[in-house]
Length: 231
Image (cartoon, rainbow, N blue to C red; front, side, top):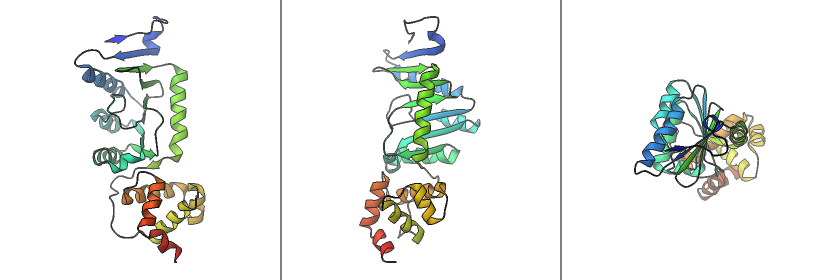
């Protein structure tokens, strides 16, 4: 059942819709309604997901359909998604399909933004809020834009590899262990910041690490940093 905000029933249909679930088929109903919003996307869908089972940011076939239609997808997930078999597989498929997928240590919200016109957020227990208020949409979009540069890209088709890393990878690990930023590491290595982030993503996948810090710890445990120090 869809209910409207009592504040202004003339404004509510275009600005705020709350999808409430009280029936036995609630999950199906809410999933379908969110999928319908995604199906209407023409340009861009932004996703921030903590990997919950909530209908707001669960994985959907409609996402792949949107990518095939040329809709740009930018998706943020927590780092631990890389080490969970099913989420890692799905993130890899989305990245391979053309989505821009990145991870960071933790995501602060759960949200969808469709064409920078509608924000979809969890409401109360069992509810989803579909908001067309420009201030809300802009706030959620701005948050995503601020998080995006520091997140590490998921590289499709980048499986873990056996053996020690190449010399440049070990040098990068040593730089990160010393507290270097992506920018300073890129300058030291003579590569772009984007290349550094791709290298970090690859190393995290190889090490099965949930975060950069954990990647450093695991690299040290394997003796990779000692190898670099001894060069």
